[in-house]
Image (cartoon, rainbow, N blue to C red):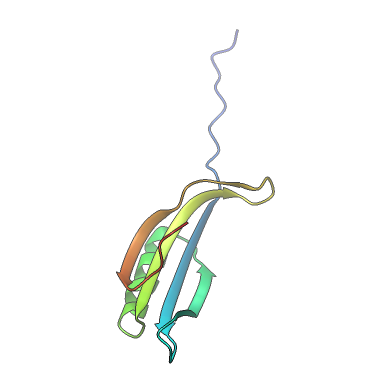
Length: 87
């Protein structure tokens, strides 16, 4: 028996930033995004930059394999202001 172990391949990760504003009737609407980000650090930087000009911003990530329809639970990276609950 071989002791060689194949390296574990990292699952692809979906990393997203969304900024929200309020309409005339007070309803939240998407003002920016959702946009895919290259890294969690970049998503946090982008979300922080958007936070000063929108009523709500959220950056989140999850393990994802869209080809298989396999998505892990979302992890909030940054949140500011009014954002809806993650489902």
